[in-house]
Image 1 (cartoon, one colour):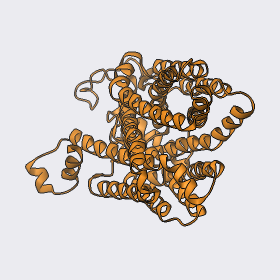
Image 2: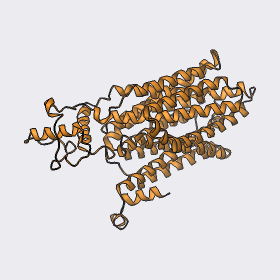
Image 3: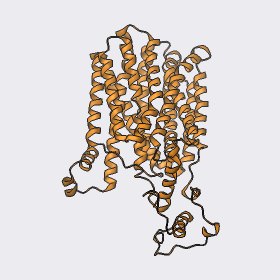
Image 4: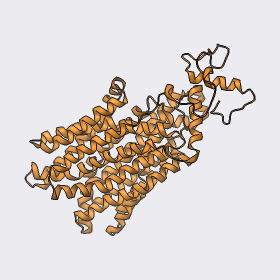
Length: 479
């Protein structure tokens, strides 16, 4: 309730701000609070449509195969356009691209409600996928206003906001489904309109790199990184994280596809209605697990274990969950091991996102996150039909074992990407004699003298300036 008000106060009215001054931390908190609320409403709107697939099929006289095309067209739009949205957010800002994505989603829901043919519904889902890069841009926004140490925690709060939407959206959509799928689509479009207004009024454009290290050491690294990004190339290490995103999203999408059939065939003796009801409850439980792990578990575990061991723990839980699903003796045990899988993915995935923003740099983090989300869309494009074929023709338990293998690779591709610590950074383009790096002190009268625990890098930057008295910095951030 109050964080958007703080955002409004910091965005408008200098007289109000003078009467009630806001610290930079308050402004950041209000901006992030508004961002999380936007992500929540975005997922609620998506969840409203999820229970309506059978109604849509009945209204247009199509079968399950044609309804499956809805997910395919959504994923195609996401794969093509999320990297473009990420690039646009780097060039034109996070806020306008978020507003564009919200507006596009609203148009797609409205078009679905007004559709007179199934082809229009397919086109609307394509538009929804094309403008569905809001979560990737939201993570780029978080990267702009947080430091390296806290970034994965705040990115995990994005997951918390979306998990609440996962719990509320489908339930609300199922409740309203008795009015017809068109009415629910109009409600989803109204949610997008509300979201767009909130973003327009309360969401501020983040200063790029506001959360980064502002010491001499950090500024020098940022300047060097900006110079390295002039070529517009994503670091090679990022492709390992894209592979991690592809594997994690692929196994989760496969689980979503085959789980309803597995419940029907293994536990409910072919009763599709009972299986569908239990499957809905399973999603509610999953949302609650995601919320609890994001809000109460992730940060303490990160502080205790560190990011690398946290990925190892999450990957282990994910593998155990998938393998146990194949051999669970009852539907309630199945539900329990599903939560183990959800928990493992929820504590491992944010580390990959945080690593990606760190190695990409602030100048192209939006594009990097766009490709990250595009990899997820690509996995959702191929994973469900492939695992459905395996389920029908190879074995009903084989998809779960396959998901366990993919879960292992998702964790491995994340762990092998190393983000250098400050002390491990290289020279970043400044060369100087080796003997000048070690046995030199920085007196209090120098710009570095007041920095406690100054590293060799700080001394190196200062000595470089002293050795070239006529030199001037290329950019403000370089100083």
